[in-house]
Amino acid sequence: MICIRCGTENPGDRRFCSCCNCRLPQVIEEVIVKPATALLTFLRSVRSGILTGVIAGENIELSFSKVTGHLEGIREKFLAQSQVQAAPGAEDQQKGTLEAIDEFLEGVYEMKRFLEDGDPSHLERGMEIAEGADIKFQAALSDVENKIVHVYKKIDFYVDP
Image 1 (cartoon, rainbow, N blue to C red):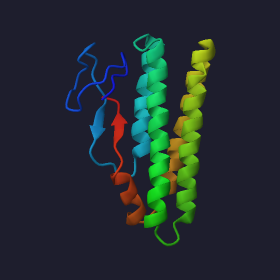
Image 2 (spheres, rainbow, N blue to C red):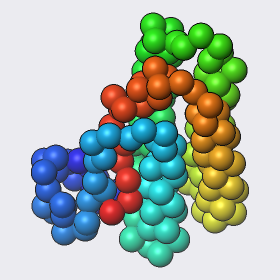
Image 3 (spheres, rainbow, N blue to C red):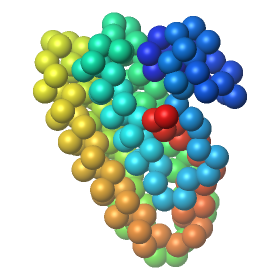
């Protein structure tokens, strides 16, 4: 587990960072239909950490990179598994899910613009985009049959402690 404050790699069973003693995000063992919500919660904690000065410098970039890397991984896994496990008639939900993931990424990229000019409005605008994407994500999944929902049970998500 990577510490969002100092960037130190910690063993998965640790609850606090071995370097700075910051509480570490916890891994959810099973997520049914709220993977984007878990990432949204983590992103909120990153934004809060930036605004309060708990997260600074290269740790800001590291935090955003972890979120974007995780979202890109979700997208790849979803594409690979949905092609194999797609439920009949679920194409619209799959399309909506991919669009929501892409929009969530757009929100994170907007937040990363804070690194260019230090303007906190990028953090707020990015959160708005990510929150909208989360709503779309949940709507896309609301009617999906169990075969598609099962895809999300196989993916680990980080959450705010």
